[in-house]
Image (cartoon, rainbow, N blue to C red; front, side, top):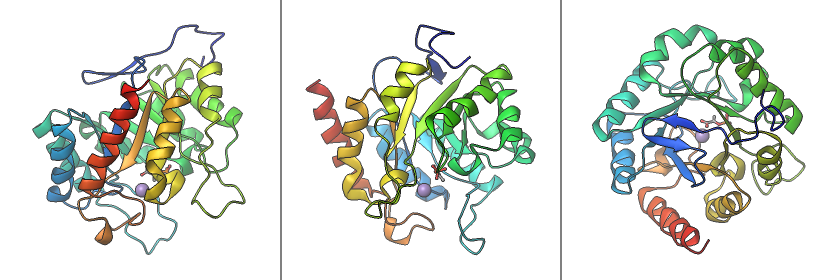
Length: 263
Ligand code: PEP
Ligand code: MN
C-alpha cells in the first residue's frame, strides 16, 4: 500500500488547512517537551507571526533514563491543545502506548509514533484504525525497508494519512547524536507515495547543524522539516542542547526562506 507501484501520485495529508505533500515544504516546530502553558505559548506566538500552523510538543516522553523528566502527560496535551486553539494551529504529539490513545484523542491532530516505537506493531495497528494522520518516525536503527513496512502496518488498517519522518540513524559517528540519512529522503520519495519529513533536531543533537541539514533535506525533496524550539533552551527539561531559542528560530526560518526563494 505504501509503494509507488500501488499509487503513482503523491499522497497529500490534510492537517487543518495545511496540505502536507503539496510540493512546498512545511515546518513542524515546537519544544521537545511541553513544560508549561507559557512555554508553549511563547513558541506558538512566534510561529504564528510567520504564519506557521504545525505545533509540536511532547507530553509523553520516551526518555532513556526512567529518572529523567517523563513529560506532563494528559496535562501537557491540554496545554498544547489550548495554545493551538488560540493561534488556530494543529497539534502534533507523540503517543507512546495503545492505552493512552483514548485519553489523548481529543487533544491531538497528528499522532506521532516515536523512533523507539517504530517496531511496536500493536501501536502501529492501533493508530492505523484512527481517523487522524500519523507522523511515523524512523526507528533508531531501522533500515528503510523496515521503516516502509512499519508504515504498511498503519496503512493496512485503513489509515491512509501517514507522513514518514527521517530523524537520523545510529552509526559509528559520534560528532552528531545520530546521522541524518539524507539519502533516505529521495529513496522514500521514489519508492513510496507518502510525504517525507526530516527531523533536524534529533538527528544532529546540536543546533549549529540545523540550517545546513534542513537545506539538504529540502534540496533532497523533503516535504517538510521538524525542529525543536524552546523560549529558554538552557533550562529545558529535555534536549536542552539542540533546541533553538526564539531568536535562533527566526534566523533559521529567515535563512530557509531565502534558500527557498533561490529554488
Ligand atoms: C520527539 O520528536 O519528541 C522524539 C522523541 O523524537 P524521536 O522519537 O525521533 O527520538
Ligand atoms: Mn526532543
